[in-house]
Amino acid sequence: MEKNIDWGALGFGYSKTDYRYVSNYKNGKWCSGEITTDDKVVISECACVLQYAQTCFEGLKAYRTKDNKVVCFRPDLNAKRMVESALRIEMPPFPEERFLDAVKQVVRANIDWVPPYRSGASLYIRPYMFGTNPVMGVKPADEYQFRIIVSPVGPYFKGGIKPITLRVPDFDRAAPLGTGHVKVGLNYAMSLHAIVDAHNQGYNENLYLDSKTRTKVEETGGANIIFVTKDNEVITPKSSTILSSITRRSLMYVAEHYLGLKATEREIHIEELKDFKESALCGTAAVLSPVGKIVDHGNEIIFPSGMENAGEITQKLYSTLTGIQKGEIEAPAGWIFEI
Image (cartoon, rainbow, N blue to C red):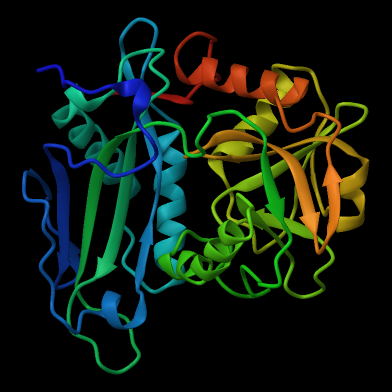
């Protein structure tokens, strides 16, 4: 039954949908899992997730293509990354093939919540897992729950693909040998104060530097970042403490194989930023959000692409990747997962 929703007015927020997927881990194994209408999680007041933040998550989207198919974009990489996140914080991985099946089940169950083609909206899919049994001493839980919830969403940043402003903060995102490379809740909890502070100062996001030397660009609190040089090379920071964004990896492939540009992952020093002509944040939620300005402790770096519109290369990357996702442009083998 078609939902009575103004799809174009949606922001990036949670709307309760009809169904969610749940599987529990107990006595060393995951149960078969099920689709349920129950949106409440009931756990012990001393559950490990509440005491020691033992939780990880993923984010992906379902779209309607131009021929009205419902698809997801490279969910196999989300499944693989969630395994890596779980292992890093001593959680039993949810099997990759079951992850893909669960995504298919929950999207099919909520098929009427998938926004129409060209509405500017999508169905955001949030798989997550957490320790559920009581834990008082510092140790991993013995029991876990894996869930997938979905919600129709609009653009992550209000205004869509309009340039935003970043600041270089006096906070670090991740320790050199910490958990910056995996998608765990504790990474985001420690960034909350920094993002609130950035918003209070009039910035859209923080651009974090490496915490060891504070000389190299890493990523923001919720997205990877790319830059475009004056000779149209697309570059992105290389670091062992950056979350490996599926969107960023896909954009680098698109830059090289669809647009014929040189695409390079390397260390990027803060001093180089003034020499680039474009910049953009990239991730599942935002896809691409152009960056017009970066402020480093009073030093303003305004990219030649400006604060009004996305740069030429950023726009081409955005149009090509979203075209692939929506079935308007032929996708590389294995990128599109049909629901």
